[in-house]
Amino acid sequence: MTQIRPVNLFEYEAMAHKRLPPAVWDYFSGGANDEVTLRENRAAFERIQIRPRVLVDVSQISMATTLLGAPVAMPICVAPSAMHGAACEDGECATAAAAGALGTLMAVSTESTRTLEEIAQSPTGPLWFQLYFSSSTRGHAERLAKRAEAAGYRAIVVTVDSSRWGQKERHARSEATFTWPPSGNFIQDPLPDRNEDEADGAAITWADIEWLRSVTALPLVLKGILTAEDAHECAEHGIAGILVSNHGGRQLDTVAATIEALPEIASAVAGRCEVYLDGGVRRGTDVLKALALGARAVFVGRPVLWGLAVAGAEGAQHVLELLRDELELAMALAGRPALADIDTSVVRTRAL
Ligand SMILES: Cc1cc2nc3c(=O)[nH]c(=O)nc-3n(C[C@H](O)[C@H](O)[C@H](O)COP(=O)(O)O)c2cc1C
Image (cartoon, rainbow, N blue to C red; front, side, top):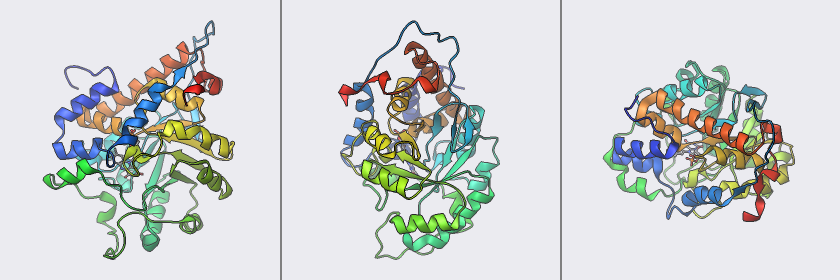
């Protein structure tokens, strides 16, 4: 571990910035275009105020819950992100061990550096598999889904905000200055040659989602939902979970901060599927606000990569511990000792 142990996630960010090659830093930290949404994800959390209750017995704080039936020790999970091998040697195996040590869930990216099978062999908690696919790569997607099922993954997270890849300008500038590790899952089963005329991205429609459902027994979570209309469609189509996400501000710039999109989605779904949020979660109070506005759990992306870059599995674990401890403190000071006590009365929604 490093000499000075960071006391919050922002200190991990600063340390990771110093350690990582500039191209990797640009890829991890950047957002699309002007990065308006990237900044909004943080700013919107900061605008929301908490309404604490006092004189409540907070001697016991309980944050254990379930996600699609799988028990987790806390409502803070690891978001799927590519290329953990660019942050530390053990890549996603280190991340999985960190999540496992905290008794929480990790979503593994299609674009992991380690294979999904290697990751599942780590001492870890529940795993979900994030799938990128296109209508033209259904065969490949089916094999990945079957591999995930066989390896013990409990859900498929389909990322639906990426019909084309967003323009991450910092990444575009420095990408060529670094040798990126290969995507582990594609080594034994490469994607069929891309049609040059085809737009680069994961272009799918509801027909592809229905098809995917017919070839896997795993529940589906759709990641990248930002409107009540699409949330309603999800519920109508029997989707098990919705991850409210703007891809960490990396896809369509100037969409809303996820914490601002969350209330309309929670209200449209009205309990028909589980709702989660990612994007800009850096403090325990952010987690409390997301739970208050209808999320069952939150996912964190970049901070886990910072932890990996600073101190491998130990760093990623410490990042998750810091968030857990901050959430525990926030629940105590807000006078909501159990997850069931957290509802919209926790926040001043006027700010939204
Ligand atoms: C470096 C990086 C790589 C990512 N790769 C993927 C990916 O492969 N699949 C995916 O669905 N989302 C990916 N994401 C988006 C994350 O799942 C998540 O939505 C986002 O990071 C959450 O915001 P946060 O970083 O502010 O916590 C990536 C994000 C980052 C920062």
